[in-house]
Length: 419
Ligand code: AMP
Ligand code: GLY
Image: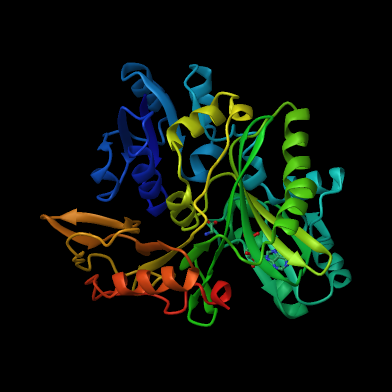
């Protein structure tokens, strides 16, 4: 099968690496790609924002499966266009991608179906929103309804901060994403990510992970897209995982199917393990980045066949075997991230990798034959071992062998899990 992979980050490098190992993959193409993805796939000169051009490529090149990495093209309807041409695609329709594309949509769905999540209100007028704030207490969480590249969530510790966030979002500070705001009760607990593959009807659990959102050691400093992750998440016991599947993921997937917008792809649930059990923080309609980089090394079977089954309604006949080991990934970021990252810093990677280790490219490019940084998160250095501590030691030993003077990384990835 010829597979087309859409995306250009570390998540997509991990997908390319795993898909290239699949017996079901005969040819792998990728766009836009990056130098790491290029080790496993042919990079095609394709404007991925031009959905008709993507479909035409698939028709001309007999693509049997399109795997879409990031959320933006899904929310914008790439999967719908491809399905219109009968091209199998791993990723939800625009209607189903609303689970990530609109926070208000998810909260209404949870309310209608009794899915545990934080109490909320949705507003599109500043005065009404501000008048509604006091009943949520402090801290209170203010979210832009739409996609805001991970920046649309403010945890306000004072009424003044909450009001400012409401005014900023509804006042156009977040563009169309801030046409309405969701106000949420602040939940207390440990956060964990749970993944499930869906074919519209059948759900297959696909592992758990925890990431580190803050830029600094000890979980301090500004939020990032994630500075590192590990899988599985030890805090998600089998009992809690079953509760999350039964009370959160299953009713969601059933509701989407009943509404005529079946969910196809990977559903990524951000959960809070509260004193009252797991509650939904948010959904994403794609693999996490860098969570994907720790899930896929643990998956032991044919990924291409599995993603095709999800894309074509065949998951009931599948299982998802995972190695019983632990995986970790350390993000090497360019200095300045998550503000304005310094671009162009030279990177020298070690020759050859130890067993059970990977270096995935997230934001790199080649200029004049030299590998250089080309984004905020630049590399993901990962390892797997029998225990999380051993994986952590192996990954940091490999980080030491990467020469990237303009980069930095957290020294404590995995601390919660090791504890
Ligand atoms: P989101 O983009 O919805 O995942 O929000 C980003 C981060 O904000 C989450 O990973 C949580 O750490 C935090 N957060 C979001 N909503 C809540 C909530 N209702 N209570 C506590 N923390 C939250
Ligand atoms: N690492 C968080 C995310 O992918 O949304």
